Length: 579
Image 1 (cartoon, rainbow, N blue to C red):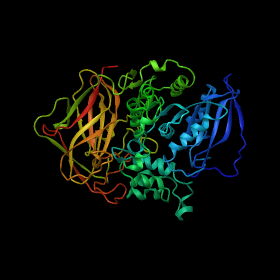
Image 2: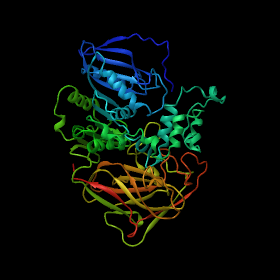
Image 3: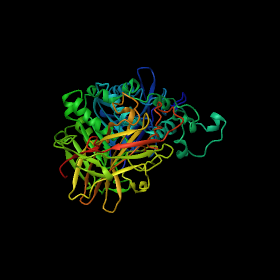
Image 4: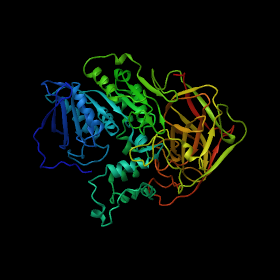
């Protein structure tokens, strides 16, 4: 969308006082201009206590509109101001009031730096700045922090990516179609979306029918199905299908050593950016730019999707599951911007254990003392901690024209299907999902940490996908995903090292399933589902080996999973003490 700024905009400051129930009176200064290093003007609303003074400052930068009524961030800003902060709520470049061209991700590092330093120099600021916000608003915090602005004191990125290619655009190199299309084309295009007939003379479509649009091939012209023009950034994403310099230049994971301030990450076990939450904490803990920054890294993960909740998917995790994230944020900001409050003496990691529905504090991630335990795929669909003997394999067929439908999992924000722990029984009739199930557990088993699948497999073509789910099967047969991972086979050697396969040659594929924390209860079964599609969360691999987005045709793939003594396949579970 183009910015809404025009020369007719009133530049006068509007002063608005607000109070409720005796709370601190605040004022709001509209349309405060910060000029970026290239001359582009970005506009902010500044909320602060009405009493004169210099206040610690919080910067929030959003592409969704600083005055969007009803949004979570719009409701939170006055709360922070009433707590004694000056809050800068800014439209990012090319969005709403701010000038410039909207090009997602490309300018956030330099604009974030410039905005932080501008805010620190204002007469209402005491020169100390922290940043706040989730999702894209979290990404911009990482981007700015990587530039080490002198006035930045801390950052709290929630549900945020740390590598736009690896944990936003894709997972394991597989394109997150419904999210990227829904966000990049439908919600956040290059320009204002005019009625379709204005662009093309065609009849305007009354609604976006995802079932048809997302099936369109080739992908690289899919934007024309709804936008009816080429959405530049969407086509750029498809063109750069591997982790090349286009993506590395904006990757926060390449620059953790430049971040010199405390960072607190927050996320959900079913959030689309779970990997960013975890990688942000681990990256700062191991590579942060100073000893203090490394020691002060913090993380909280709940049984949530793209924000705190009590019930998600088909499961209710109890009244303690939902957390008021504003309370955690405010305590973090108070500690670093006002006075120490003991935060630094507490364990750095707080996790919600599903299955028993309990919060527990941990000393690190991965949890010290974790016992990584292999559970092996076996003949007849068995899953066991005992390595198989003899020779066995399982075959199935993957037809891109009839992909496995997305049913729960780590998706959001554009996907037409439900996310989270959704019962998998709706997929029981599918013959293109291979299921490996344990015997009922004779005692509870707790896992918390990174999960990965070591899959020995082959396909009869040059490329395919491997989709793996870790599932908690209840005694009544209901089955809920607890973790999932996807790998596009050509990226088996690394996201920056694509290489096509030799037909029918077995390879060992490592499928990163990110992580989880769950207690499999007595009488429950552990199940691993393996398939080759999860649509429309991920695009359908056409099995042709062609570059991403270019294939207008598909081919059926014959898949072979090996689970023998010579070629074992196993999932690695991080076993920990019961919480």
